[in-house]
Length: 113
Length: 115
Image: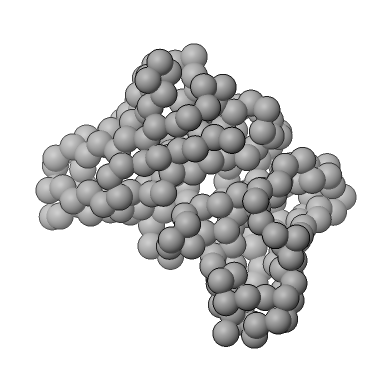
């Protein structure tokens, strides 16, 4: 099955700096890659996603890039703010697995004011 | 529009007991997936239900089971509880199973503590 690895496990940045979180996946058939943000004590929330037919997608300060050849995808957050502090999870799913998402182990992002 | 509702929010059980957790998806969503979240193992897939049928299953022992009702509400059951079953159990609903149009919407979870 699919295996998703996520780095780094913790990331500390100064407010206003950029943050980058990277994930690799093993199954070349995976074609959907969502990112979730989970604040302390709250549910994971989808913040951005990308499909395999697209190389990059942006939504205001958040962007995701996908390199299918290398089988890795990254989350980029620009102009970080303290409210960006949370745990971020990447995930991948192949089309044959009916909503079974394989999650990375999570990155705890701390934005220092 | 109501979100995904999980009940109860918190639960404390004793080793050897069994427990049933409930998940009501967003209205119109027919797919419900369950995940176990622990600090050490992250988010691990338990199973997914669509139209009352289990369509996918993760690598958990048979003590973990689930079902889905005709109104798409889902329950999961854990029998013979072990200390290691202590975790946050999350369910997620989506509009169409197998579709790439919608990602999961997660519920707030049930925090299960086994003592």
